[in-house]
Image 1: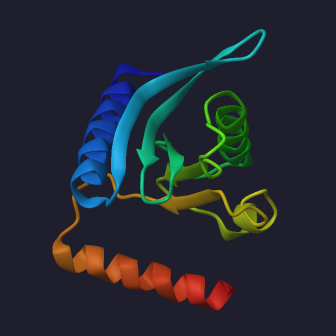
Image 2: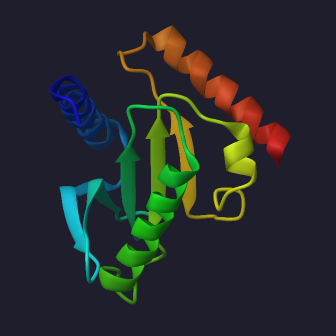
Length: 149
C-alpha cells in the first residue's frame, strides 16, 4: 500500500474512531487493527467496538476505494470468525460495517449483504461534511432504505 494511501487510511481511522466514540451511544472501543488468524494467514480488522446497548461487537472495515465483492466477502469472514472466536454466549451476533468511497447497488443486491442482518455497507466522504451536508446525506440514505423495504 503506498505511503499516501496509508496516511489517508490512518487519518480516516483516527477520525472515524473519534466520531463513533463521541456520537455513538453505547460504543466502547475494543481494538484498532485487531489481529485474527487462520492456520495460514493473519488478518487485521480496522476497528472493533462493543456496543453495550446492543450487546454485540461491531466490526468496521474502511476501504479507500469503491466497494468490491472481495471487500464484502472479507467482512463476512471477519464477522463469522469474530463470532466463533471472540463472542461470548450472552452476546448477540457481531455486526460488520463496510465503509467505502462509493457503494454499488448491484454488489449489495447479489452478495451476502442482501441476505444478512449483520453486514452493512455505506459510503463515506474523505472530508468532514458541513452539518447541512450531513443532514442531507442521512435523509437520502433513509429514502433509499425505505424504497428497498
